[in-house]
Length: 181
Image (cartoon, rainbow, N blue to C red; front, side, top):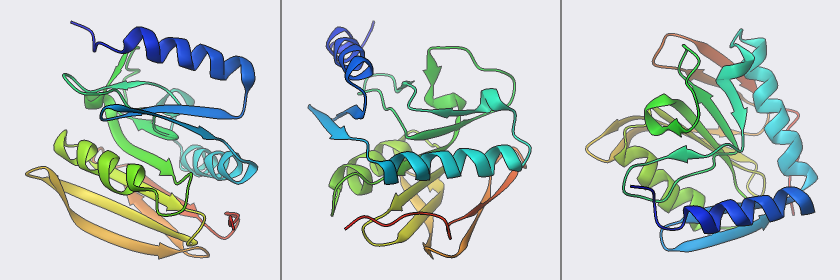
């Protein structure tokens, strides 16, 4: 059985595609609509570029695609890094090796609490939250019993060393990440 708001979410996504610059995400019982800024877009592009430079096939690195979580709201990570083997749509949390979220608003509890909790609960191996307001990135790994047991804080200018559970390694330089005020 599909999640009850699938039709509504699909409609919102269609509207956003036509309007451009808007991102919609379902978080718990809320629909969150946020503007994608140039900072957001450039950071997304830089993360994808680092993954491709590390040798990941283009079909494994996706931006803003729906990931299904059974019995819960689907998620639309800014960048999704999928397992090898060409998973097919609809994508499942089981396909996800890393979810990257670029914080849209200052003190964004959606990215730092609700999404983090859901990703950990479903065992997504890595979650990277990039905060252009603080100029920091939180890399969370090793989900155990619904929480991430490892958290590493990187400052803009550092290189994030992301080791995927399939053995792939991605170095993400943050020196080109733009800040938001």
